[in-house]
Image 1 (cartoon, rainbow, N blue to C red):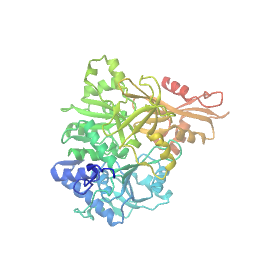
Image 2: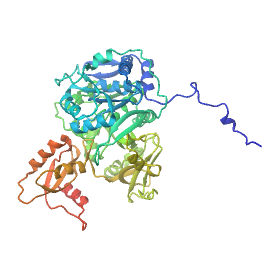
Image 3: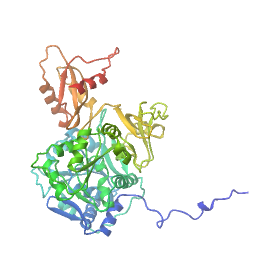
Image 4: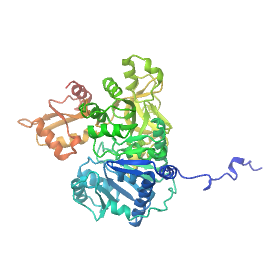
Length: 544
């Protein structure tokens, strides 16, 4: 007798009536339908409503399609927090292509590597970055179609590098372009590169489904009501702005663009535009708090501030609260679409003494609603460590907001997903209430101003200096930047190299933010096998 087939498996199939691939592109289409006249973007004197935002995104998609750009083609952008960056987050995937947002602080060699590794077909670049992009294009093997953006609100003098002007290119597109959702929600939507902790950076691939879910989780985590006003202090190139370019469309919010992070423009925009939310590294808090009295503004509205990296000191949190900001601590990585862990504050903690509140705030927290699994595991056995707040393990993630994998790097992808978990490389503990707390970084990453700096990369440059015999780079706590690179150096006999000499040398061979701020000349502490004891150097750096 044949086994009975469950009625739930008969005639209940996916159809166009009951299933559609998840993609954040649908958020903008809905916002334009429901709130067409609502202000979507503020940039200088420009005001763009959702009807126009959607139209321009479709025009960009149409123009890219006319160039022959299609599914899985890479469109690279070198842009600051300006309207074309927002349009690219929709227009590029509407053309079925993959958006590759580049860090505007990178040097030419790394930019060239990324263009080649991504096999970029198109490059949209701001004229501000013309010198470094021109050098990168000369180094790269690929020859992308270059489109120059000239900011009408903040004109730049950099030379034009391509045959296309961005505004003319967009206007050549069809405002009624008939885009469609991806055939598969697992299709790639964006490509983001890690900082390259060893060797070249790795290309992290996001899919439409993950971007859709993380964007919604941001709205929930940030308690965003309808029509929030969001100030772009976080670089949009960083994990696609933590997916907030898509989040704002869900609630028809307003993007307030910020080309440069400067204290007076930030205070003015927060006050004049009635900003309700912003994100950023601790450097943003320092910039706001250290502004002159003639630059600060009294705020009529409370502002939600979401920060990552090292938790801010209690004194900074208190100063931010006095200034009108409520700070929430987030944690994540490029491989999990940006933030995937939140220090979810409980109201009963408000009654704790300040020192105990500070201890609670120092923890990274619990998983986002879009993340299925967050745990601290023994990196060898993959067994959970005791939730005692003491036992070290590796922080691991699992779920729909974990990357597809590393582009053209199956070995690294397999290693990252060993045992069915994404291995973060961060060491931490789990407290009895389930909240996790980071204790160290297994790869000695330095987080400065929200940017990841590889200590190994800096060390490799120092070792190339003719006077350097040995070098080790660690993080030094910094009130403004969170952390800065601190180099401990042994020089060769007879060397006359100074601290300024070595810092200048590093600046010649690295992006400026990666160069050490401090150089200490000493004999490096080593184990009996000759391994440099970085933990000892970190303690010395703290005492400097």
